[in-house]
Image (cartoon, rainbow, N blue to C red; front, side, top):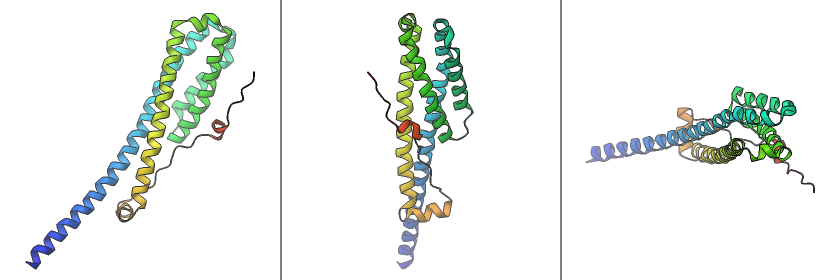
Length: 182
């Protein structure tokens, strides 16, 4: 009888250990999935930009510097190595895109252009998806980091080399509220 109890306890401990290990893997993989979703949305956004630039070029020929800057910043997003670097490069790109959208105010024909309107809407929708993906990523990183830091999972995390993940940080320039002048 003692042997059966010992075997049952060992099997139970193995099952608990396996369950905790598997939950850590699940948390880590979900964070990686959300990281990938950010990449997907940033790629979608950078793919839309050449179409936007070409549409604007036809109306705003003397705005070449602004458009060249947008293309350079788009390339910076694509060239960034880490997720945080991509977020920072994308933040700079967002500022440049705001300038392009402001051009529409100076060119009523551009503002009325259906393709430009569709591209603006697509970019706006994509921006919302990027924001959601960033929030989801940070939420999942928080859940994962909490899981690997709390007892008894922290022991299992240490044994198997689970490391903390970094939250996405918003660049300081984006934290400043824009000035509104009338």
